[in-house]
Structures are given as C-alpha cells and as structure tokens.
Length: 349
Image (cartoon, rainbow, N blue to C red; front, side, top):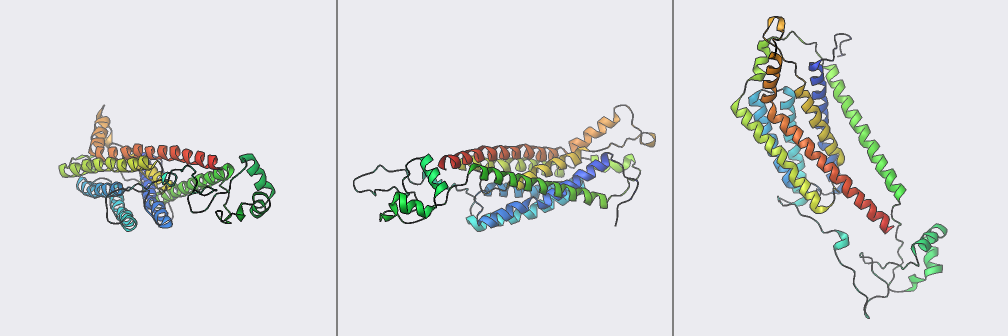
C-alpha cells in the first residue's frame, strides 16, 4: 500500500515512469474542462467537428499500431482512453450542432446591422441593436461623473429627461466591465489553471510512487522485443501521426475564421500540451541494455541501440511533438483574440 522507504533512484527508468504517469493523469482529465464548457454554454460552437473526427480516427489507428508494435503499456492505455473521450466530445458536437461535419461561423453581433443614417422618419433616439433605445450622452467624461454621483434612476429622471420620450424605454443599462475587473478575472483564471495543473502533476507523481517497483536486472534479450519493427504496427503508427497533425488544422482555421477562441476551454489545451510533452519525455527516457558482459556496452553500441529504439517509436514521437507545436498555435490565437476583445470592451466603456 505504501511506497518503499528505500530503493528509490531517479534513473532513466524512473523518469520515464514518472512522466508517463503524469501524462496519463493529464489525459484522464484533459477532456473534462471542454466537456464541462460545452455543457455550461449549451453549445459546442467553439470546437471544430472535423478536428474531433480526425482526432478520433487518429486514436483508432493509434490503438492498432500500439498493440501490433507492442509499445509501452502506458501508450496503449492512453490510446484506448483517447478514443472513448473523443466519442463523448463528438456526441456533444452532434447534439448541439446537429449531425453535420460543417463548421458554421456565426456572424458577429456588431456586424449584423450597419448603422443607418438618420432620416425624417427615423426615431429621434438611436437604437442600440437589442430593441432598446440608447440614451444620448453629453460626453464620456460627463457620463462618467454622472454615474459616479447619481444612480441610474436619478440621472435619467432629473438630468436627461429622456425617459419621457415614448421612443426611450425606461431600462437600466448595466455599465460594462472595467479594465481592473477584466484583469482580476484574467488573474483568477490563470491561478485556477495553475492550481489545476499542479494538482494533476502531483496526482501523476503519487500514482507512480505508490506503484513503484524496484527495477530488476535487465538482460539484452529483455529489450530485444521493443526494438523489433512490426510493419503493420508501423503503418498504423504513421497513419495515426498524420491524422493527429491534421486534426489541429481545422481547429486553427475555425478560430481564424471566427477571430475568436470563445467556447474553447484553455485548460483543455493546457493539459493536452502537458500530456504530449510528458508523453514524449517518457518515451525518450530509455536506458539501452547492451550485449556485453554484465550488460556493459561496447563503444558505440549504446547509441546504436538507442537510435533503433527511437526509430521504432518515431511515429508516436512525431505525432505527439507535432501536435504539441500546433497546440501552441491555439495559445497564440487565444492571446491575440483575447487582447482584441479587451480593447473593444475598453473602447465601448
């Protein structure tokens, strides 16, 4: 039940085990933030259906290739879990969007109806786009002083008098969020994401610690099986790699068309990046076992064995590292479009 009090050593096998366990922990929870975000919004508009479908196909070939090639058990476990979680996300997309593979881009609210020039028959007071007339303001500074000194009711009743016009409903329009409020909201989001990442990494490490077994003496024959090429397994692995890399492109393109990442849980992509990074490390942290006496390596033998090991796992390395770079592109889009949204909010206020 408890980890051994001695015998722990931070060698390559331990690093591979720790990062592999953290990767599993990340991928166990990675889909939860996006599934919850879709449920909370009652929409999957932010997700590309093509992204999920291609990702699902990649996971299917991942399972086939991993089983045939007899790669690390953690790689097979993750492949099966990916597939199940993808099915849930795809079901949400079909539920909210209908059974379609087309990614619709909604028209921004600000572009729905261009401002019209006043005419003799138009209302004296402009419409704000939601059916309510917007009270005219003397100036931004004057409006700010009024909001600071009077309530909304007092302002309209004693100063503007516009509520007397039948064209102006007596509706209290809430003031837009201020810059400090937006910054505080961003800070809370960053802190929440940071705490979530730390907890998941800690859970992964503890999972490895409580299942740790002292390594047995390795022989060269014990590692031969992991260095053998399986042609069907390699084909499945490379198909999986291409599908993984291609799956991110529809999502990046959808974000570009919408000029927004709204509806996407950034925690979803944070865990995806962390899961891929630790996954790659767990594969690369490999200690070659040589054929020499007592496992000692002859000059150049360790490098040759390690090179063959990397080639056997190359498709999985390329797939994970490639999607890691593409997910970084999603983060770039997030900060680009988030900045634009904040600037528009400040301008409107």
